[in-house]
Image (tube, rainbow, N blue to C red; front, side, top):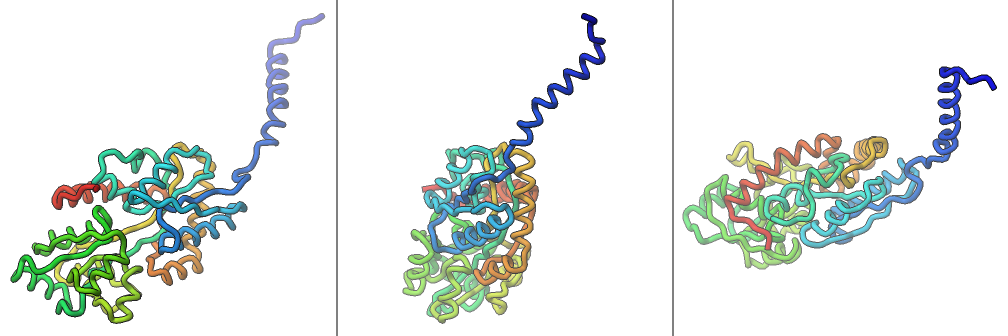
Length: 328
């Protein structure tokens, strides 16, 4: 038998290998081939849950598979975040994270179980939720200037309510105290409802809360808006000035939401998810619904999530250190 020339042998071997792998490649499933789950680390029914369900419907339409919302509240989003951080990086498990997850918890908790940068693949920013300083109508606080004047004249007069130690509104209240140079006693409650109930009942004179939770009471005349902590005025409260407008330029504090997947997500899956999120978040119908929920549409890509965390986390650590905010 005549020996096969080396070049011909190599060509035949390459052809045989290609033929062997072709069926496997042809049979490789296109992602996604089954439903996805979106972990929302808050209880059902709130603005974050509604935002998650809005995104789930849109993403499901874009990806061709249902996206099922799973509410996993607990420990200021730590429970849900840990679950997603430990999930397989296959694109089938996503997290609707809040700034609490990525910049507040790491500032006040030593042992989280996840790293805000290393444990996740950021897919995009979704929306901002503004905070508002509100007062009991009997407190005679019609403006931030009124609050500062009275608090400086009577340093022990004011207590402010929040929906929990280490929450975004607790950070907002402490930032207000630092910016204005006033003293107020922080009174944490277990949620917006008890905090705002205490405010309407006069147990605290002022509170910091989300515009979502505060708006019904503001419209009903039960509490008075004093200033919004966002950089711009809000469409829902156009007559209410910002803290920056009230004499403290550059002041801003709020909460925001981002879509994440576990770290190590394959690049093709990441690209497909980022593209789907961009289309859903920027759709006019999605943006209109966000505004109805008193959220501010604020889409940004995965790199924008990372940049925001890297900028904000040191700032929140400084606020926590200055105000001695620690997880309970």
